[in-house]
Length: 282
Image 1 (spheres, rainbow, N blue to C red):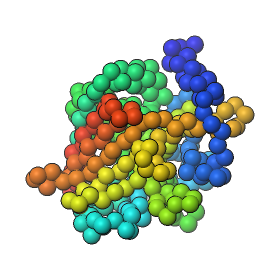
Image 2 (tube, rainbow, N blue to C red):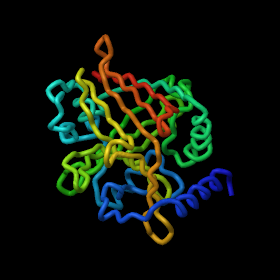
Image 3 (cartoon, rainbow, N blue to C red):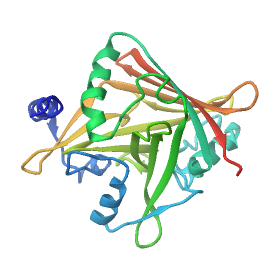
Image 4 (cartoon, rainbow, N blue to C red):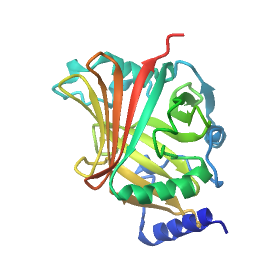
């Protein structure tokens, strides 16, 4: 057994013991794509398409969300101030190129980096850049639409790889999701993993300057970072991990679209990713 397999086994045992059994029919936002094998990689969307009878389409105009307004709070006092290019980015994500920088902070990052080096590299998923050198040549961005029989987008797979090494960074499956009992829709991102996934629920808030924050923290109901595990008996168990996220999409002082993405364990920030987004006009 490799050290990677051993560490994954430890995680599965931890989830079996500590995670809570959940009925995904009552909490359907926790029912997302799961990888059966040891790898996820850059072609996993084909497996999801086959399993769920969807059609996978790679489009140069595809977006993470067909209509960004569906995840906005219509009662927001800043609704009219929304920067229209932010909506364009989410509805036509594939049109944009991106440069990214990373900065790891605090001792918590040591453990996170260990998991990435030992596990994420092998399974080709959630392979966060360990330093800015990894992404110094930029990052590719492809959006694969997964459509149902009526042509409606069920998921958008946002596949990002490093240009220099062609290494999968993320294979995330995006959708707008309305939680039962809530009038608000959330951005749901599912990262398939072997025997489970990570599901992140994000609430969208428009700021007074027209920028947008996607937030996941314990003070916002239904948001969160959920580690979903499917046991050998087919039982779904879920552990809510105390990771908070802030994704701030904004224009800088010269009008360029940028994103600051922060990860925090409880209130201690351990990773800051910064993106410069540029519309590809060619």
